[in-house]
Image 1: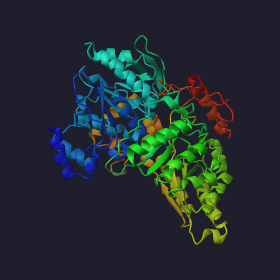
Image 2: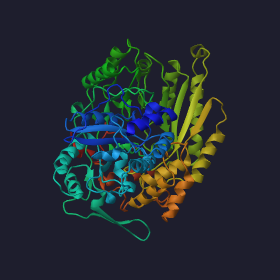
Image 3: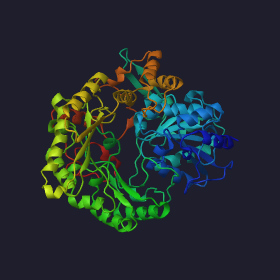
Image 4: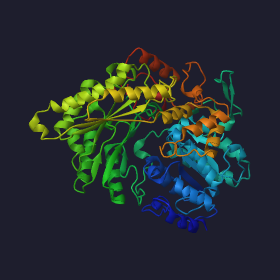
Length: 614
């Protein structure tokens, strides 16, 4: 019934390919009473969700279980949502157009704080009770994973549980426990008690939080026997033996990352003090060249994509990058498959690497110095020198490139006006480097440098987690100062929305008191907050006001090292003592070497199985 009504709606919406399903390599299983069902939800539109590698892995992995059905669910764009609400169509899965509320499990991936309102909106559209405490035994369990699950207290009253870490093993263990519980007749809480024994599972309702009069957390403690004070994350130790799908779904429409994604390794050796991913994914664990080449060949055979991207936090840090690229080029050049290497660093870029990148097609080059002066790059532990950038720019220009993108952040700790203006000055030096190349080598080419800045969002589990964010007026003043300082029309300047950055910080550092704000904001119409088409700052401020909460408490307050933090429930392996040491080093302008150069004792070695360089 719903499928027929949905098909009628397709005639009246943009991009109907977002909703039709049945793509090549999608999986369709027969629904029988003996099977468990998982609605794997991505809280954004189809073309964003279908670009996410983690969703592809878990979708195919769960469907390899004979006793489990896993189907995809994406947030409908506004035009489709309006049609669905008018026609009384609930949120449906892609594969079988089943109502999401009829699944046993509803799993969301949390990639970005600005998608939280979409989670509430999708649950509302599905007809699922918004608060975990309101769900009955027959209702689906709602849970979340992904990087934001480590600091998702704003969702504490909305989700039944969170999974911390890499989900390949955990999701299967959750289904094993559910299979036993489903036919047991036991209450809902019994299932939660059982899975709370699994490493990496956090059940917010099993913890009580009290607050001081100033709003800071007074206590955070388990309210049941056998529940750990902290939940330790899960990692996959052996990357060669982890699950990798051989037949990826090929969408009918173009997606954000419309390509094969080859995951080289997890973790990062660098320790940039602003980067949450660099800490929560420690330790580094690489895949072998042999395994990666096998995966690449299988993916080419099963998809027909014309581009392959090597995915990791810092691609050029893969220890066997050149043997890998040689092997990949041998299987891609003749087929005209472009090889893309994102996340390259300016301090280990070479002519040889550049020539490999442009064998099939010359893609753009993007680098992230992050700060405009060496002083500030030392504060954030970027460990990149100006001469590294100039050397890399010249290599690129000599190789035929004439367009480079540079990414920076505004509002970093200790930032001065000189640091802000240094961004424009550094971009000008890149322009100058182009004109230092002999005229005959330039061959009439012009130069263009795009400078993009985002506003710094201090994230949990980084050395800067205690830092306040710049106020909105200060952010905008810095962007204007930089814009006014750039007078060369060969430099294009773009910057991020300061209102969005502010709200991102509020929910990154927020506690469970923000749950009701989220629910109220959704009722006011907040959704797709990462999209400029929909973000409405005034509605959010109204929601905060209704609940008597000042969002500046979370964004603009310097937190104390001894304070109980809303995300202290999670143990990522990196100790708080290490983060404090790094915070103090930042203010002394001291850099920390990469993990390959020296072990600083962050704590991640406790997980074993990976490569901790000592």
